[in-house]
Length: 272
Ligand SMILES: N[C@@H](CCC(=O)N[C@@H](CS)C(=O)NCC(=O)O)C(=O)O
Image 1 (cartoon, rainbow, N blue to C red):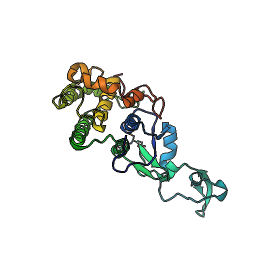
Image 2: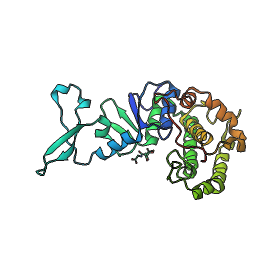
Image 3: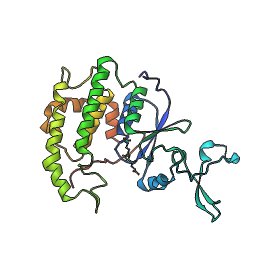
Image 4: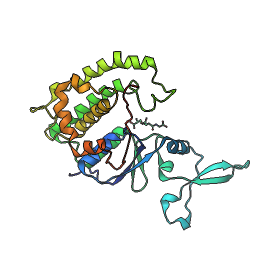
């Protein structure tokens, strides 16, 4: 695939060990057959890192014997009463350069980090030539906007691997609201896509694999594998689109846990 917008640099994606907000960038790289690296974090690993993001308390210098600039970042973990550093720990480049204290992130070869799932997905799509051109580009971006609206109905309302854990935030009231309030609204939102299908009924762009289509596939996948398994039985006109997309390289690898992230559990889960 030819890169678009001069997005030719190699990157590493950093994210949790979950099929979550790094999914679309991952799909774009895999669909385009682009080389990338992935680093995943457990929650304890992330908990160790987050407080160490730049705060003004960080001490960094190079240790000449190290020979590798990436292993030369250190962090002062305790100070003497005179304010001198009494104990240092080595930290990774992501700990040093995380920009927002949130993931996903992409990291360039010089250690520079870029945050925001939408930004990194577009970087990946441009790298893979999956932004589209002409009207395909416009249609793909329209899908991104529509899917952003769709996901406002899901995020915060659907059960997740975190909120269904014992003592988690997915209360019986939330469960009732998911069924009675949110699912009908989600169905209405998904129905909006049907009239936008191109002739043949299995794609929205002539290319058929652009970022907007990958995003819609991913969100339908998260619903189907999670709390709304029957969504396409209720909106059957989208079945040919979903089936065709599921057979593409990127979606297939994500589903079969064969991306650079390896085995990842779903973030959204079925109703407990
Ligand atoms: N607007 C950001 C939101 C990023 C975000 O909220 N990331 C969450 C996980 S999806 C996070 O890093 N949470 C860890 C924390 O808050 O410590 C994006 O789309 O990337």
